[in-house]
Image 1 (spheres, rainbow, N blue to C red):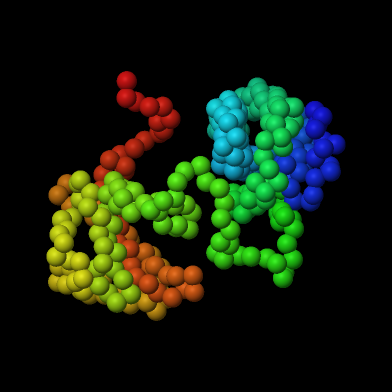
Image 2: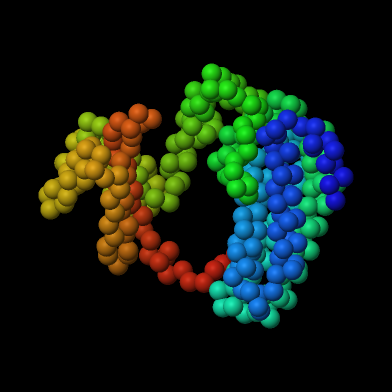
Length: 325
């Protein structure tokens, strides 16, 4: 284990691979303590260690959403397939142990804990021997510098966030909202607009909104309806006639006062969300209103979202496999 550690030690502070190895040291320490812990005599100590180890999910998600896409760009798809499946197997073991923990089924905890420990040890060896050495060979220095913002959104197992990479001073720090650095993308951005997280053409945006399984209506800061999505099966009928209309005239008289109260509460900053649910023609309808504010917290309008949740309410247990066959 840690055959790649000498190379890692030479990396600058905060480098994503160096952070992964700092987490690896923490994981190995937790595994050693768990191996010695006895749930029969001190369940709380075991339980605390297990919960701390469970934060390994953040490591899995960072690899899957941050590291693997870059490896794919360089033609290495193996981790996205094999290692992701390995993650899922470990997730299943963690999920199973949580069930046994909840019922304090000590024999089952003892039986299954060893599988989890051995599985994570095996994963760390594969990371050290293959994943990280190959990743260092494939990715450029500039690509590693792209990781910090996304990694920070997901989080780390460490008690304190690692230092930003590359290192920044107060004078050189650039907030993500002001970062306009162009980065290579594996697709064309012709005829697209840059949104907060990604690029889409107007046609793609329209298709996305059309196929969302919810009804969305957007009212601007002047109380005018400026948009609604046209799905195949709407909860409530809409027509082009409402575009440009004041929101007060788009609701039945009996509900206008309530709608206006919501809008005023949103404008004043008193509230940000309002929701209702009720029976409508034998279906359960869930309606939510969300205040829309810009980066300066100024009120910019209201999103009204309606959804038929009848079938969702009837879900029980879990279904983790495709039921098409």
